[in-house]
Image (cartoon, rainbow, N blue to C red; front, side, top):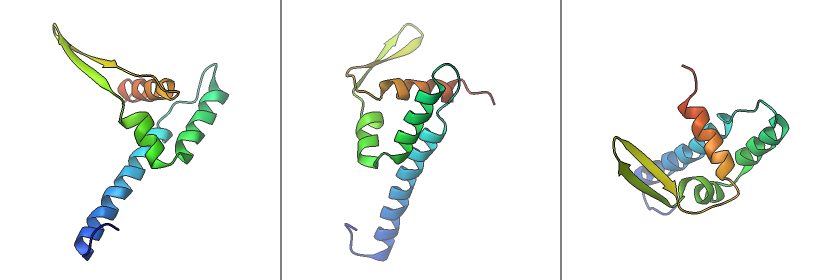
Length: 99
């Protein structure tokens, strides 16, 4: 723990717990159906087992350019990594999920 009193340690642990919950929630929300069901299932398991530092670098710290054009906002991903397919599958699954 990087701090010296109980309240600060508690806050640090709550933040760490929320970060791990975000990672698990994203992985569990990935859809596993269709033609590539086995591949998607394996990717889901890899994201669930991934360390948070790698998750942060692969999914959260993506360089992105935000452009306002007309009446819409365009997000341009400025770099590539092997997890972008999973990222977009998770994004579209969350964005267009029923309910």
